[in-house]
Length: 497
View 1 (cartoon, one colour):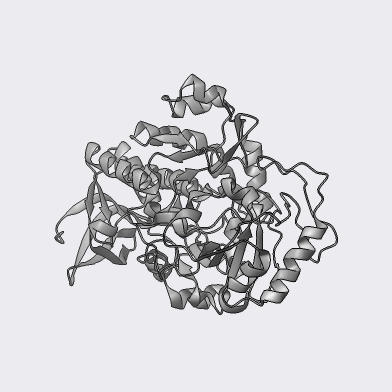
View 2: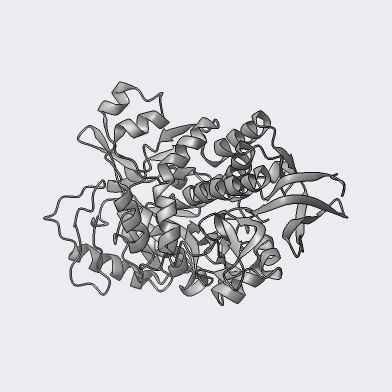
């Protein structure tokens, strides 16, 4: 238990990716740092532990990747087209997928500091690996990465979290568990620390700076309904049950400016019978992201999205909202045996709601809650509309489409005609919310007069203004790391000054 008399230079609220980067960056400035984790040790780490660890950054080619992954072998390099992903491409993706609503200064900071930040993370002991199998398919004997996303943290979210804990020990960063920040301590000179509650007791911790990095409000059903709208209380939460918006609330109480897409969220197709919150034993295995190679049908037997509108990286975070809006908040992803080898490992976990049949009529009859006759008619009409003359290629937007449907499929349109057939029941899985706090170029939280609140910084999912309606896959971890490092560096520098 921390006593009232103990003082720190920087207190970081949260223990996920953004918080860890903030703590380590503050430590780089010579600050004495404390990390406050609301969850017990077994559940610590926020949403970070539930991710697959994919992280998006700009790079100029394989040499940049070799610097991050020095254990890449020559044979691995020879069999892979890693391509390049320029800062201009990253910035353009940020604009395109958010309908050009992303804050240009925040987006520029994210993009321009992305490679530098992952290099810094590596210097702290974080290991990286290529995302073979999920972001590159083997075509004509060679893997080709697509969608600007090439690298993941070694061991996924669990590996990333363990790497940060090891870095805490190496860099003398203190962390306490089961300790919830309840209130910011503030006076005429700004934020002076936090009030915390641990084991039923309230105490105060004083610090020169506080960094809020405790996630969005996705685990708060009341806030979800208030800000995202009716029905969102019924969404599944992909990650931590501790991300209930406490950091946002504390900042608003001292006059912080709300910012960003408060009615928006990262929401994906998720196992229909998954638990209310994330399960660390399953991790991100409940997600179902191979839909570009099949069809998605609702309980009325109708398609409602273009499954091949873009690479999965650029559509999956908005299609959860579309599924939530369907009858029964339910849909079915349908595949035939031609694409079975392309389905991600998450389709093969034990905790999956799946039906299989040798005929389409039988498959439609087995999809619980679905109008089977309409579903069969929808699939038949789809098959008749496929442009067979275009070659299927999962590594590029191949233009293999349909013509004449109410919702045409733009790419990867294969006839569903080769058994056995499979269907997977999905609902909406909520990852994180897009609304949050407004910060400036140093990571300081701004008040409603757009004046920096002295001593208060923010990073991670509770920063608003980056994402609107959608986001490019892998950008969440990158944004948390970039703005966590920025906030921690400037918070630590206040003490040094």
